[in-house]
Image 1 (cartoon, rainbow, N blue to C red):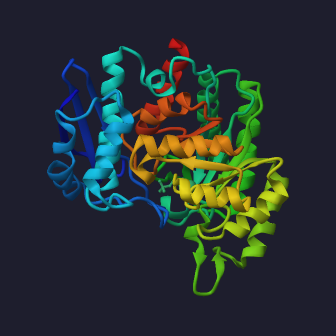
Image 2 (cartoon, rainbow, N blue to C red):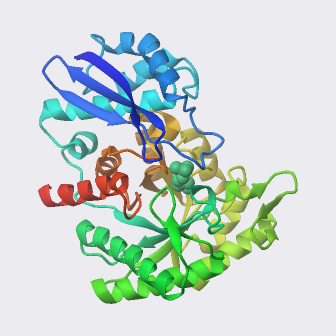
Length: 398
Ligand code: PGA
Ligand code: ZN
């Protein structure tokens, strides 16, 4: 039985306040978790409230429905209590940040009581032993860095890695090789919010830089590394003029589909996230028709981890993959429902961090628990390596 729920403000990786929750149970179980935060957030995400407000509201409305009321191991019960306490569709009362922190902390408290790792508690005794391939953000711009690429994320995908551990080191090798290539080309660059290099170059130049870095890293590690993208197209979309605005041009929806289909072929992309803006189910469906047999077309802002939006995508053939971010929907139960609906309909569920992160490692466990093919959690930086290093530990101990 949950006996104590504590909430506090802590820092996220951007230096903003976020919500941390601690759940204690009668039998001595303890779990702690913190909410991440997006910058290129989807319009249809659950609502993140300022940390202080979210904490005050959760203390008033949610904590009394949890303490002495629910079992930490009953995740659906915990999450139903959070929904009932909030009373809205999108957690606009207690904040999705308070909700997700409590939901994840309860899961950790339950795993503590069980004496089993979190992935085992969430994935069950009979889960397989599949591990996700980490997608490493190595060059980026968009909303995550000023004066850098239009495309938000250029991702390394070490698909040939024999283990998670080797995949994690491969992504770091690509990240390091990008640094070398930038230095050779006399292109100084800082890093964006997720630790990716943020050079002031065109997208075309970024493709060349990342391709060169991947070649070098492949020589070093001895297995295949492919490339992926998060276009984050909603951030480029200008609804008024009905075009995507790039630094050097504009593209209509049809032109955007052609452009991205060309990128998939030219760069042998294994993964393309948010190639169209968040309301363009039709554009997603067109692109999926054209390249869905050879690449994952993944909806992040399109689906926002929401089963209703995913169901619409399934009905319309939009995408073949969903990005799963628990804080986009507010609870682990909702995130699992999205994974299940995806799986039942042949969509791959990819687990993801946010651009604003903490040392919390829940998503590493979630990816293993759900046998996700990929996890997006950056390549370098402490809040990113927290998850990557946890994957290394999970693989070693499993
Ligand atoms: P966000 O970006 O966390 O800033 O939304 C990550 C993403 O778009 O995948
Ligand atoms: Zn995204």
